[in-house]
Amino acid sequence: MSYHLFEVFGIELEYMLVNKNSLKVAPIVDELMIAKTGEITSDVDNGKIEWSNELVAHVVELKTNGPTADLEDLDRLFAENIKEINQLLKPLNTFLWPTASHPLMLPEAEMKLWQHSYSKIYALYNRIFDCRGHGWSNVQSMHLNLPFYDDGEFERLHAAVRILLPIIPALSASSPIFEGKDTGYRDARMLVYKTNQKEIPEMTGKVIPEQGFSREEYFTRIFEPINKAIKPHDTENILDHHFLNSRGAIARFDRNAIEIRVIDIQECPAADIAIAILVIEVLKVLVSEELVSLEDQKAWHEDDLVKIFDNVIKDAEHTEINDLLFLNLFDIEKKCTAGELWQKLYARVKHEISLKHQGTLEFLLNNGSLSTRILKAVNRDFSEENLQKIYLKLGDCLAENKLFKP
Image 1 (spheres, rainbow, N blue to C red):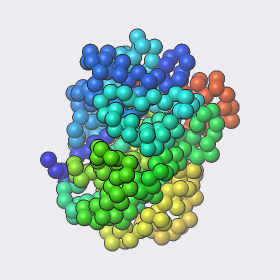
Image 2 (image 1 turned 90 degrees about the vertical axis):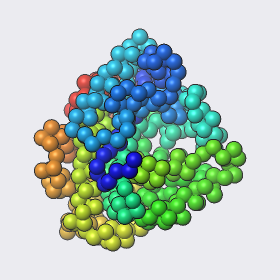
Image 3 (image 1 turned 90 degrees about the horizontal axis):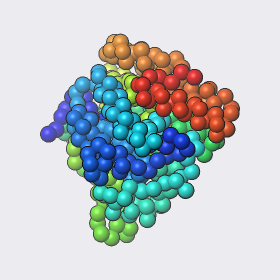
Image 4 (image 1 turned 45 degrees about the horizontal axis):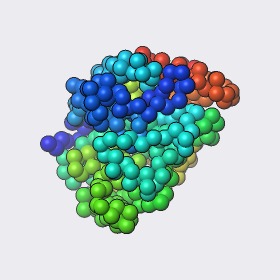
């Protein structure tokens, strides 16, 4: 079934399993699935939320079980499933941890591929790309799926999504630390995401998708180069171009949706869903052409958008945006930070957001991205003991669906 713009949504949240004693990642999602269903499976239907596993054995994904029109109470639904998973993991001495990166994980030594269903696909990925790096095994995110009904709706949605992508990490960055060190990037997940498929660059492109605004254009500019580049590696023809496209937003013509992938997972579902709602409301404004015409949105080349994106993944909300033509898209006429831009966008759409989610967004906008709050709590002490203490608090935030206040 096809849906119209903003009629329904799909949200996916990824979490790492961590051992309670060592606080290292625990590659036992298969044991979680057995505890839930009595057998090894890669997908569990748990009512309105589905659980699944992808690629690595220490990450579980929770997602809306099909499209949903109700975002208002979605954080509570996710939080209930997180509680249930933590209960199932208790006898295994394991629990869920949030944020987009484990601050002490050593992927070279600790990464284990999922060995069950789809393992043939994952083994092929591992053979081509060597999935032991942070870019494959230490990158938890939220995926936001937005429907389109036909080519006309795809054109408008894709144009708006491309414009908004560069500044989304200013809201959502939560991956400042790899291997016990400050990476210098508030969104290090997106830094490694950009290069984790360097062997076949056609798959990620420049993260910001090319100017393809119809199904035909998209196939010509994005899918056909991917299919051509993967052919020598995929001799058994088991990989699908929808699966291979790794841009920061991907068109899923198999289900008529665009999936946004540049959003780091937060400390709790309340923060994730609030960010999703704000992104959706700003996209509605762009799609309506209230601020800027469709043609002006479509005119932006990915090379110009990725310059802004590269700055934002480094400095998140503190990024100085000096490109006045870009700011004009949002009806802003003078230079400002990415954080100030989001404050203005929030003020524009606030009346469309419930008081509950307004409270969460105002906390995030006033206190900074989760990366900023983590670094504030770390206070330049990157010792293993201090990082474990802070991330244990983040684990509590996830378990209790509460915001992290350093």
